[in-house]
Length: 461
Image (cartoon, rainbow, N blue to C red; front, side, top):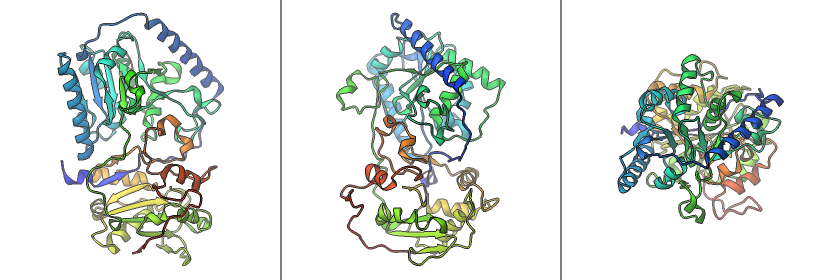
């Protein structure tokens, strides 16, 4: 694995400020009818058992090329094959997503469905997807899948739903967002081959409409549902995100290990520089929240604005504030970091002034980027999308972490967050950001009532 495969940790997805709403009373009613039909179909299949050999299940681990994550996926692959050998069953096929296709869109899964259809339609019944930390009890999984007729179109998973309409789901089903269910990838999810084949025909007749993805699990569910022409997600209680040690896990086919990944020795505080993007109109509203919450954890920190204010202090980089994208300001920060910080400062964290922490770069990634000719096409270009395109062109992989969140805690299903150790949230809209910080992100030992901890020495560039 090339060393550069570990040089960039990026946001989980592009934040698109879309104001369109996909919901309507008609669509909501369609979802209700479809969910009811799915429940009725589910009742009819529980009375029958289907013969299912393990060799009929294709396991797809949603892996990444980053060396740490690739090794985690490899360990899960070995565990699946060992369980199969212990059962004296013919070994199943286990695929690592990052090895299937070098195409950048492969991680969104849908572009790979034609490959699954062509390769596995004849001898397989199920494609089972899971994350690298999903724990699978193979005998229980087989027992669970045998309850479903593999000749039918099935979309199985642990069901999540929104409690309120949210920007990350384009305000879908605004009248009642709880009616639309989408899978928790951590618990694993499955598609029957007849459904794979149907989706493949659709993909061949009409191309995917979006060129970016915000929340893959929700968008896949929407695509499969196809405005009522496809199946609704069928909840499977045996697909769980409980920890392996939990008493509930005994009835689960899948479990999930929630933890902060340990990929080596901890990075020293003085090796991390934090750059906060702000502008004059937010100095009084947002900067005090940063100072009351996480600022004390940053040993090296600077605030970048369109106005120099010594009391904060902020630094004017000479880039005017823009209402939309902030590409010009971001590249100015990258230049300053590379040219004015010590070589021992190996990591750069760039955050917005309403982030409770969002994009992370290694020094080598910044060096490679700025040595290239890839730059913003305008100061107000979307910096996240431009950076993604630049790093893609340089062959530097962006590592996805679901622990970085582009929205507020209320924008995510509570059950989804329950098996995470979150690193960040974004936006202060209609919430108490200080309460959010001390509820979700504050390190042990902080005084949640006052928002204070013992101050320590802090340096600036």
